[in-house]
Image 1 (cartoon, one colour):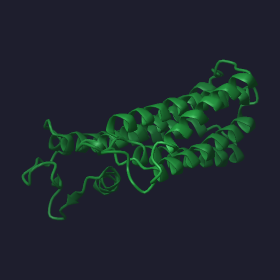
Image 2 (spheres, one colour; image 1 turned 60 degrees about the horizontal axis):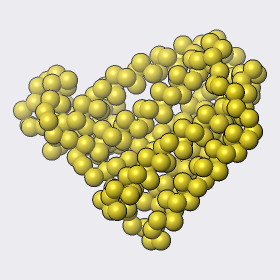
Image 3 (cartoon, helix red, strand yellow; image 1 turned 90 degrees about the horizontal axis):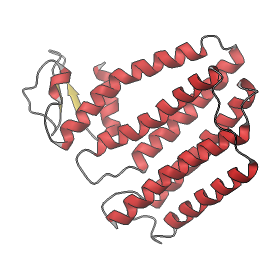
Length: 235
């Protein structure tokens, strides 16, 4: 558990140190040296760093729940569908990681918690969608014209973000969001979207691919609109 917490903390910007002599757990700069052996007590406090440590510990527990949910979903899959589901899971994880790491507001000491929240949101959406689709609950139907309009709106917001600062090596104000980071996240989202559509065509014959793309596009649009708002506030 502590090893996984360590890597989760590295992702979130918090360093967790474990001691071989006992089960003590501390977060550097987050809690004091004399913390409780119970990790759940170590994150108590009003600071942003304590909030991040709480998020790390909570995510350790929630990750196990998500793993069980995923295993339950794919249990009845054939070998081909299982393999494609794993590909989708990997693409989702890559996009979720990039969104949390590269598109989250990093201005405060709770930045790790914010990054974890963004990542978990995408991973949870994947499981929710899979469970709904397995139960025959598909997205509301939309036309190709609806998708084209959503794509156009997404492209407009994306272009507005890319056009806000010519020096892409610099962050936007205090947010530490960069154009390179946004581009990287967008590329991983496109790969994730394509993997979803590919998997759905194999697994869910009754799911309209246009409606699925519309759903994913509208979600991404909302995320980029949030990024744009962060940039405007911090610039």
